[in-house]
Length: 312
Image (cartoon, rainbow, N blue to C red):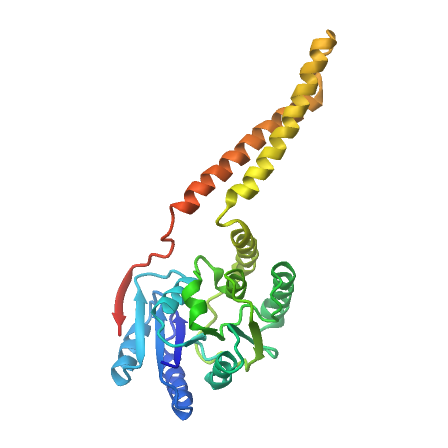
């Protein structure tokens, strides 16, 4: 199969028919073999009924339904697992991403050899205050910390080689950082394409102000997990050992002073409490690293979702 198109959705019953017709027209005009994977992230409207009707009319349209809302990352991860195409393209269900971009994205993967191509909505129709300015700050920070030079990290329109989506795991709210996750998984050829951004036609955005806080926390998490996820003891153990040694040296000095200077009252000196605190914190950090090692080695199934229905 040439292309798998993964579309995570939540309460998008109005936009799904038009989106699927548009995708069908583009892929048929270009002669691609394809599947459209609609992942219903616990919608409360009639989105799943719409998916069932679309599947009945076109078997290339397939659906996965979660019992409840797990989030976009969970929907993408499940779609990645189910995808069978040699190129996987993701797009949002709200018609703000244009399916007309599919042929060029496909060529950049198959012809130009990119592992991942991310869309760049250079001209946006969102509010400058709530979307544009925060998005620019977020992308600048992510570029600096991760080394992945993309202008629009969070664009939903992306294309991947199949090996990429089968090799990475997306959980929590890490969908914002898939290029960073891919880079740390060893996929270095990451490209970018300017894509059309369209005004929302139906419904309202599903993301509020909390995404800015969550985005920062997720960036800290992904940087930590990328470097120390498989070896947390290297971070916590090193810091803990260093602190403990500092505290131990201070305690040794105070003990020596107490022995050789009878009038020396070490408990009345502030440095005594600093040394004691350093040894306690060092021990806590070391044990944290030890426990994190045990957890990281015994939690292979972080993505377990209750799937209510599946069309194939």
